[in-house]
Length: 141
Image (cartoon, rainbow, N blue to C red; front, side):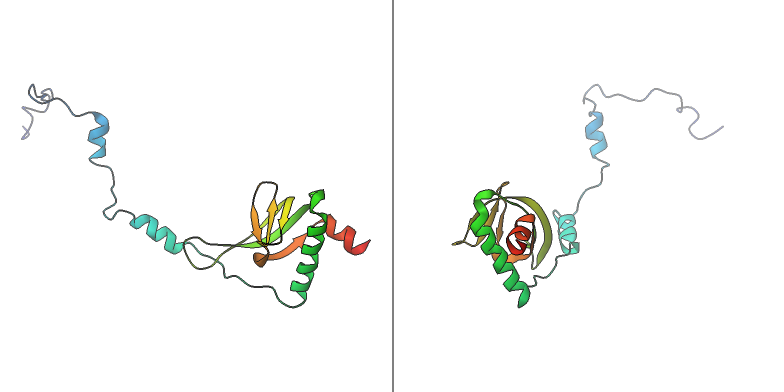
């Protein structure tokens, strides 16, 4: 005969004095926890990579300036353009490059922004490349 054979088939004891803990609360006792609050997010942030900003120069800059002048003159037509530009990171040094294809809403030459139809603002300084039919029509013909 085993050590606990006499009690193995008895019903589980339920206290008359203390109410049973809900199952969700009981499960929470065994759930993993973060010993250091925010540590997981800090690790993810450290692991996240950014790119370095490369300013255009020389011939590329001249070509971009020419295309920005074309946009300034034709902005009322709301041309569709593709813009490859740098977005600075809000949390750490660097940022990332992205490409956006959208209609131009207007050009702000004073603040040096292209404002797209979806209200995205792209600073002239961060633009690496501009493409679109509007440039082919004006430059070629």
